[in-house]
Length: 150
Image (cartoon, rainbow, N blue to C red; front, side, top):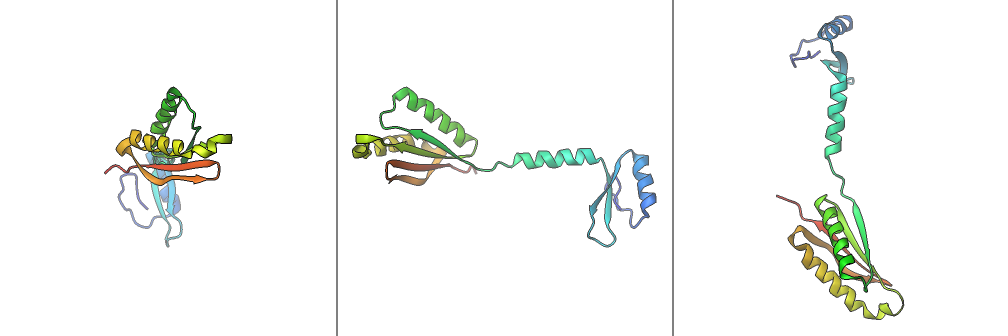
């Protein structure tokens, strides 16, 4: 058994351990049930669960966010999409840019490649190109990932 001050008390009967926990105003928690004899600790269980929950929340799972564009998008609309993409990158998420060509736009895919190269230049050193612009049928797709900070 381990008490509230992290002192090892050795092997103690369950009744004695429960009475010590009640006297300290805390809970008796079994931390290693598979060991022989099982290891118990006197602690505030609510505080322990809260700390575990907070520790779990700190880890950020990287997600893939998509931003859709068209070749004839206006400058202001493109700026709004770029701000959105920068926000995703700052949060640590990958960003997939998808440009959809409709009708005769399909024959001018070089406009999409130019726009994607401009996006890469605009994002600067904050991102690395994980998947360069590539044409897949009526779509042009590029994936940018945030650069890890040292």
